[in-house]
Length: 98
Image (cartoon, rainbow, N blue to C red; front, side, top):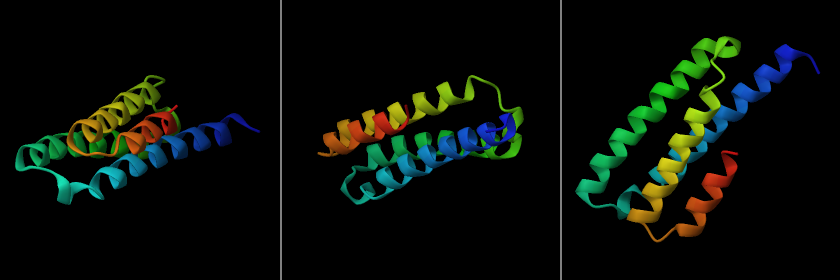
């Protein structure tokens, strides 16, 4: 496998992890309080920013991008643990980022 295709696979996995985290949280928005929804909007804004940078920069993305994605997905998993009864889903989300 060439370096370019490896980079493409890595970028695709990072974007897929962001999309999965966002969709999992959005599926549960109806269960959240207004304060939790505000917290979610902050998290989702961060997810949008990181996803846009990854998609825009592609292979030029800095090595720490994967770490930032993992941090954000951990934040989404923690958010779900705090605000919903989906602890198992939050754990599976956190593991999908690794």
